[in-house]
Amino acid sequence: MKIDKMNEGVIFLNEKQNENQPDYTGNLNVLGRQVRIACWKKVSKSGKNMMSCKITDEDSNKGDVTAYEVQDSRNSEVNQPF
Image (cartoon, rainbow, N blue to C red; front, side):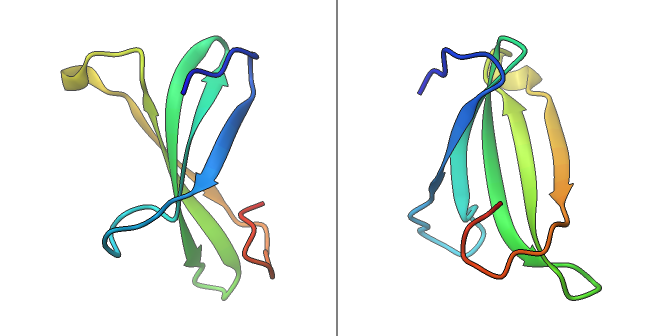
């Protein structure tokens, strides 16, 4: 899904086929570049709910994908990611 508005995006609950797949997936427009985001619900070492996310650049060739790891340590008591 292409996101037309710069610096916006969407994240959906993923219908997982196995436990290794992300809990959420989506698409973002980051400074005009289309990227995919995958997020897993986790608990930090200090016991706080968090999301671990991986962002991959859709604009690069499959053999040349740039990936970024992002941690969101905000405490979330509900099943919503943010």
